[in-house]
Image 1 (cartoon, rainbow, N blue to C red):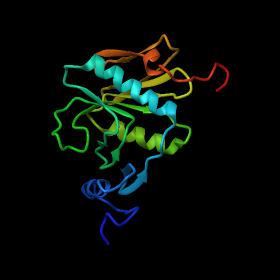
Image 2: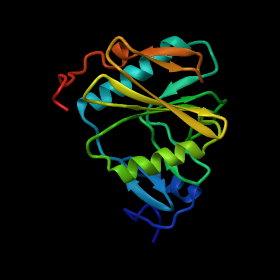
Image 3: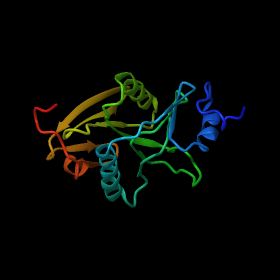
Image 4: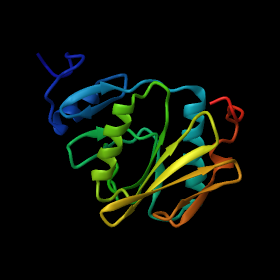
Length: 192
């Protein structure tokens, strides 16, 4: 049986996964040799990711770093992850299938993501030496938590409110939450 004919192959190496995934209509991550289908996100989820990518594209234009959506990140654990937005500061070749030097990753939190999935994903990102910041963005309220590498540790900061800004020190810029949540219907305070 060929890899392409198998809907959910197991025990794949990163190289086998890349070959298999190219023939798939849906997106899959590779986690510990197992493929996991990526769930579709809500309108708010996609709009937030688009807002992040567009705002960063404007700020980073002309420099070595580029914000990308639907771009894989290979972690030292041989897992391929799909962050909602990754800022790649490397020099990828035109036919590369993954970020070359991911520096900052953004994940828009989804109600469908389990705590275990979020924890595994977060640990994978932390294990990648080029990733200097991990940003978890709420899709229901103007809130984000930013984790910044500090030597071998990580320091966390939560920012809230549309007037607040994310300090993206790894990129030398800030990102206003008003830009991140532009056009997104947010819950009122006290709703959750």
